[in-house]
Figure 1 (cartoon, rainbow, N blue to C red):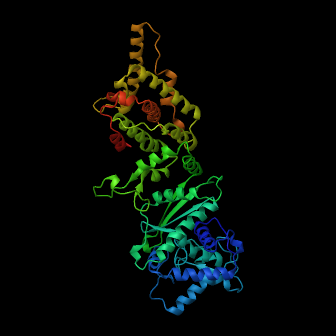
Figure 2 (figure 1 turned 30 degrees about the vertical axis):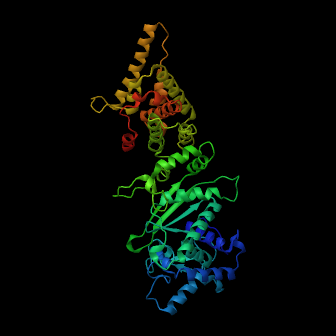
Figure 3 (figure 1 turned 180 degrees about the horizontal axis):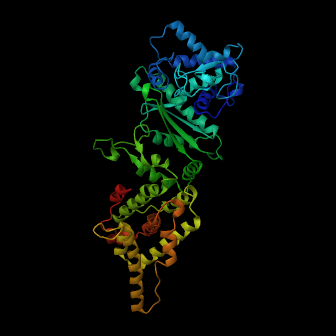
Length: 481
């Protein structure tokens, strides 16, 4: 009986077969239906596109792609691999390693990618070679290429804790492969280039048409990118933990969507390497172009600080520079709220720390609006002076001390009580105590700077005070990320 097993190749293959018959449960499929599917699979794999594609999945000993195999031997091999469930002979004493049911076949590298070939005893018990497998799991593994895509010369497919998500991806990829089946020219098929970019693009499409509108994506997702070709067999796995999956889903809601869409637009890298083309000459396409936002989501939560600098802080700086030139303010952008979700929900930073950072940033905003201290803003933004012999941290600390001293002196002249933008507690809690994240004072500075920029941007302060960002260039900062 066909069933999901939690093995990526088997589960994707089961999803492909279910989609072929438009049914929900593998248990309802009969052997005669599986025979009809196997016949369809056999025809599909003889087309020019799949004859080429399968070479990265199965070795030259495979009956699908070996042009020198005699027809009689080829027929015998396909009968075992695709139609083994029709043979009701007595099972051998071994169990299928995937589902636990009685095994009837011993598979090798030409049947299952990335295992060893015939005669190699490494990694098998009791000096038995090959993998014991039942005919149903074997058929599913033969079907899984239909639920995958060819990306950068490798096979690309998706497995998840949520079975419905596996089925959605398998259906989308199967539909594209069925389009490729109609092509007579192998080179005519549409293949992807950037696995992580393509996955995020397809995930967002899958989210739009999920069967349970009120449901949420559940659990983690893993993207597999592998080749079984020759001596270069290899696999790369890209994992999205559950908190990152939840973040992506939340950013599709109405309150965050304008900010997310802007981050996506900023992330596209349409210009091909070595060619000079303007971004607006070609619409971004996930099958051909790289999106650095999509790529870097796979680095969360470990690289959350670099992610914030590259995709949120730099994005905010671009909006600031646009406002300085008189372009309209986009009120619905919520970079700070997105950052709160990343820092608190993904990186698991104490929310009290985030709130303390926000309060300090708001005090700095009040100070800048009252004083128009352009020099302070430029120094806070730019960080260190490369010509100084002092460390970057020393220069930052001295900037804070000098700013407080300036406020005290000016208050003394006016006879008013000074309202310090920085207190001792502010400095310790925002810039000195990020040990749980493995970060340093720069994270606190980046978060404060982001909040300051967003508030001043929405009040059009930069258009009214263009001197504050003289020599401030977001592209230069982007190079330092």
